[in-house]
Length: 167
Image (cartoon, rainbow, N blue to C red):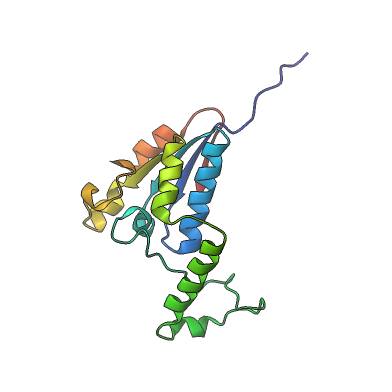
């Protein structure tokens, strides 16, 4: 008789490299879901994703209106990319997105980070991106445990039952 191997996901390591509302919240929702399911969750913010954990930007994220093929207007019609170039449109769309999120009681980024870390999730920043953007750890949310190289993050992300998710 063959022994059945446990293939259940036990650990997720997520990499967030973009700062649009939809990309950051995809990462936060998945990380929070992982900790709620009892999984180990580690989130690594790199490049523009650092805005999600930078005190100055974290609660002021925008929706990408240019080059976003999934963008829809009310009624489900495709959003013409050209409209996204008009001054004020991105801010308006972002405000509408935040309003919809408020109606669903989706917390702001800092509160989401509270929930993730309270559940045992870990938040990290990318050293290379920090150096490129001339950021210091003091610029980041207090939720950030450390600034790591990608090699350090990969070393933490491994093991049986692990998944790496790039959002």
